Amino acid sequence: MYVRSVFKHYLAENVVETVLQEADALTFGGQKKHLTVLFSDIRSFTTYSEKYSPEEVVSILGEYLTEMVDVILKYGGMLDKFVGDEIMAVFGAPHYFDDHAERACLTALEMIRTLDKLKEKWEAEGRDSFDIGIGINTGDMIVGNLGSKQIFDYTVIGDAVNLGARLEGINKVYPTVNHIIISEYTKNEISDNLVTRELDSVRVKGKKKPVAIFELVGEREVMVYPEEFLMHYHRGLELYKRREWERAIDEFKQALQHRDDEISKMYIKRCKHFIKYPPAEDWDGVFTLKTK
Image (cartoon, one colour):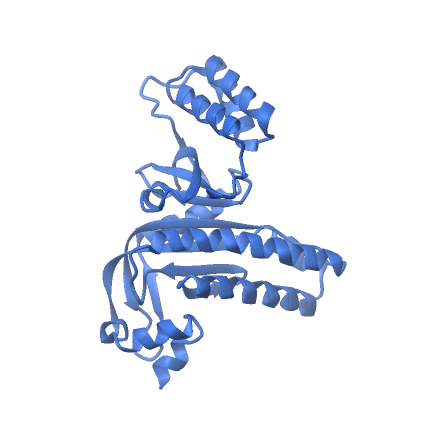
């Protein structure tokens, strides 16, 4: 069957069988659903590509993408598309499950762990490795066969999808330990099993409404950050929001005594800037990003 042959490249086999029983998923057109989208991208892949022959680039990219797709399918996600070295995946469609946000986050964490293993392998082979950034957002999006009547293209579109892509790019501004950034909308739907750290409230390019962003740190039983570090960091962030710059600096400095952290250093620089150049009275603590 044609539809089975299309979906088997994007979904786990057991999910394909379920989709084939849901006629609405196969008709041309879309419908609004509450879903989670994940974007991942290789950092500085153009520079990496210039260093190796096309055959070597295709080989390592194929190895990487194969491993990443296996992780996505393991958690019931749908591979939406590849755009060069970027991966787009959807959780909750075409077969819906309530914990789509949790599954997306677990996928992201395993993608990073899988990449770490690949990096060890590549380095043992004498090949350079690379890092990736991941962005995750949850929200209402249009999902369905949104291609043409000639070409079947099951995908998602909408503002929530665009925000997911923006969050992936924000990793370049906020260098976190796992390189995974999720929105407040995703955080609100995941369980206490997953540890997050608030990074900032941002206004992404092309959007007026600010969104709180969080680092996805890891599963609770795999503690990445010391408790003391997180305690001082979160105190510092609260003081920053209240414009208590000097006290905020003290807390971020205490956080740094427990762990080296680029985000804490960033906030110390911001606080020093605001001490010298106080923000306007209507400052709401939101950071406006100028680039995508």
